[in-house]
Length: 314
Ligand SMILES: [Fe+2]
Ligand SMILES: [Fe+2]
Image (cartoon, rainbow, N blue to C red; front, side, top):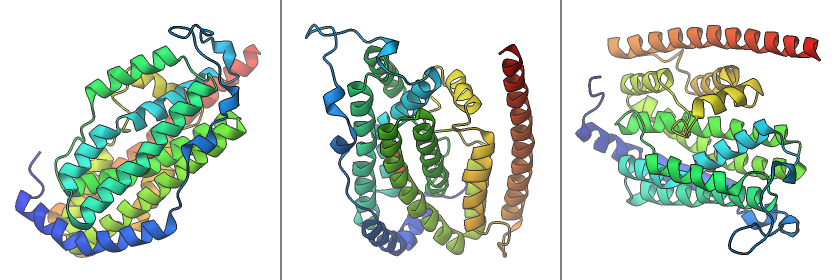
């Protein structure tokens, strides 16, 4: 793939976007409110585990959560766990100085709450096997995380979609759990992800004004090879199919509730003044969405057929 923008252009864009970052940061700080992970965890339900302190070994009967609920919770937590890699990615692309740096650190501090509250909740309620969880965390974090593209515009586009994707995934995992405390905790986390999405989405809207064609190319490329931030989790394909079959996060949600609304906010379909490369990128984006729609319909049909067969078997 050809380099979309030079390092010098990236530096200029970072500089030109700085006042927008400062404004968005003020807006973010005014609309967010502090919350405390410990308040979302039913500590009195906790019991000592076996091992060093000689408590009770974990067993699947310890919690009423279904297998798919457990899978979704573990995927969401492992995704949050890779925060050091995400911090590295955004600090590399956005820098650690001025308003950009203030945002990078603030965002990292907010994200850290997500892993904390999820792990405390899962451990105290005995929702998942703590040994398997820790082993999975070690494997996942040892792989790290790298965004597939190298420029700050790609990075901005990726996080705009990724924050919304994680918002929906947390929210739907909470609802699926049928556990009021779990649902409350995950809606709290989802509310953070939503504010993060708005921050990045507004920044990219400003980038569209400054550099419409370059931004269109970055957005189109990111949408075309988008992967969830947790895609390097061991056995992710099987887990994501399980999550999709349960309707927690599937192609339909990805297209209709993540891609389409963000693209509409940027008014990508009405944007004028694109150069030939920008027009080509928009066309490819449109074609990709049509293919995604067809794939979503196929998946929904297969899922419905499987559900009908299962109902017949009783
Ligand atoms: Fe998060
Ligand atoms: Fe987030």
